[in-house]
Length: 437
Image (cartoon, rainbow, N blue to C red; front, side, top):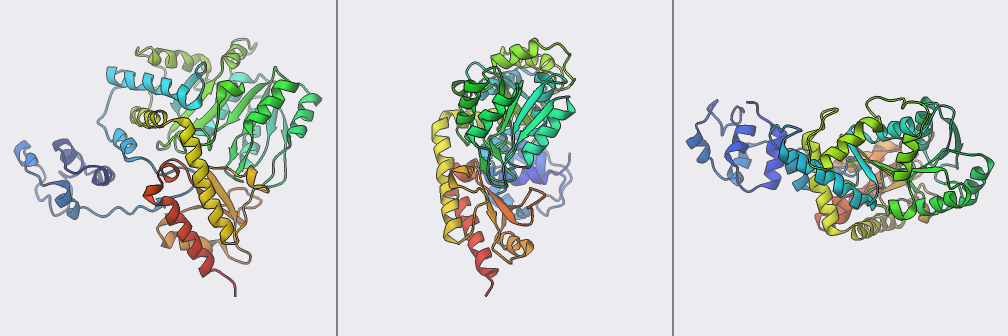
């Protein structure tokens, strides 16, 4: 048995007493002065003091407030769900939890008719799954590009043989609806991809309007939305808007530690997949492999293709229950309110947002130009000194020009935790301390 400091510290934040299993898990063989014996009997474990006393013997958590565009800060109940013993992926309790998570995913994506797919991986895996299952070699795809993630999605599509057209815009801007309509008139595309929020620029695309344009001009084109930095925070109504694929990852507004790739696929897209002439150009990411697995788990039946990350799925079910219980409309509004608060502070300090128009700015993050003549390292170290982590620029052509603040999940939906106030205060300190006379 080994001392698990991370679990111990998570428990310090979430529990008032230590259980027998807790003690076994995190402290029996540690070197802390409270535990002088290498092992303890059952009766001795029962006599261990309350956690309030135990905590004085454990090292303090060296945690800085994580205000980057993902991973985000997590709800303690979600972390508790991960701190569980080894569990079989075909255990009846896990099968029920996974089936529940699949059903809840539909509710979060607002897609009662869609097919959820939840697999081990980052959000990028959902690009591969979209490209390899829905595009055949030689077919055409239109990429609405608002930043580096548009570039990378285009590259992914090309790997699987797509002929890609990118509709681009200057840094911080986005293609107009008229430009999108014209591109759709100029050629026939099997697929259009939209990055809902590009975290390299902080630009938010109006997916509903783009989808309406596609339906008007090219109704047979499949609509795929990269919602990695938007799902569960920005408004997305998958079925109502006629979207065919919506992709995300666990570590952003879904509110679960990194490691899960999530997507929902429309029935129209599934028909296109079943109608393809060439075999899918993927093995692990094949819809043919994963959809039967999802359907089995949802039916509360054991199944196997590749081992699911059990603890992450348990955490996902916990988080999705919270989202659904509290309501998606309220969650969308709380992210708007949090964004407005941060952006009002940015403007009050005389700083400038990267998006060229306020209505183009995402509600899940703020991309902000550094003050003029200020070194990025000097500016960012003020956040570090305040116990806050924000992100530097990501776009390779502008990465020394701006920084990014994430405001998702509990940082946005629970203002009483003070996350927004803390990051704003750190930003004010950075502006004052680096101000050029």
